[in-house]
Image 1 (cartoon, helix red, strand yellow):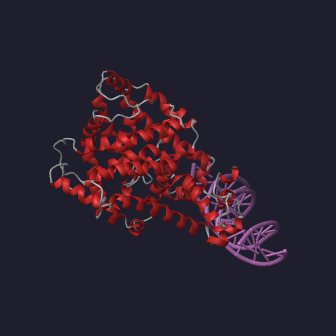
Image 2: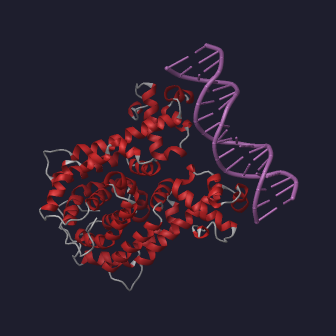
Image 3: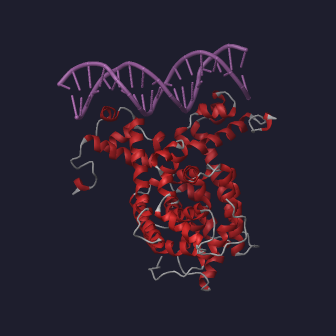
Length: 218
Length: 218
DNA sequence: GTCTATAACGTGATAGAC
DNA sequence: GTCTATCACGTTATAGAC
């Protein structure tokens, strides 16, 4: 029964075991704070094998980080570029998809944010993040709605930030919720499930809110 | 003229120079990734002086971290407990105060979030964060509005997360905005200035949005 | 209080037996 | 491929002169 608890116990190749363990530890502690010994222990392998398969801690980290980033942005791209869904439909799917993803991997956001600050801008280029967002079906639908006067002519990033913020932010501050609001882990996940239905509603309220007379040039 | 650029050049005590430098470097790189040499260099002092004044890297970090946390939560407490302002007024002040704070110190959010995950729950207790939020005038005004039927009876944390997320999240992902939206540093700050007026409007739209029939217990 | 030199330690990486 | 033992290096911390 305890053999099924984690993938280290199952019959995976040593290389895969190391990479999986590295992903867990790097996500949780970041590059600088993790020791190669931590990864070896998590993977139940000998320390020397890490260097045998991946040459160095840094090379292993680069592989894990790129995979994580690509996975994250690819799943955004899939939703944003689905030509068959409406603007509102994309919001629903995005919210639901990402809340599930973050419940399963709550350490990912801080990991990504930290790397985005640390790494230079070429990482973002390498990921093609710009094309994913700015040339997406979602973005076009968005701009059409501004042109039609359905949505106020604010910088699109305002709404992207609001949407992603409402999805991701709770996971970043979840320790605070436990400490401040006496919210258990299970209650937290229940709140996140609620938000699958709530965020789309809130997002529509934000999109159509009457905006004050401010300077709206870019 | 260049003597006024930073506080290291002015006539501060060595102890203060070290602490200021430590704050800058720790905020930017976190505990594990900063070397005491980095701090010494930033402070323009000899490496040995760091240990002379603060005993160890860890003790210096603890001092800096606690000060940062206390400063952050204290400024929230000041707004939340101001009996002279209305519910809406508190939102306005909170948004404006924090956007200014974050423009001046964009590294603070990730630093705090990372520490909240790393440190145990006793840090949150030590900060009195629970009392600051749950017993605040803001929170009482909030619950009164639920009782009056002005606001739907959702868990208060939903709205706190939405509000703080809209304020803080852009600063956490600012590198992405530069990479994706071709937003310069100045344009970013201009967008944040806009948000001082926009977030209160959006927040009110969220607060009064008709919510769907979901399970709202807990 | 401030410096130089160095000790003490932790960690990444490798050599070499099996 | 996998292990034990160990090296090589960077970093924290301190000793001791000034």
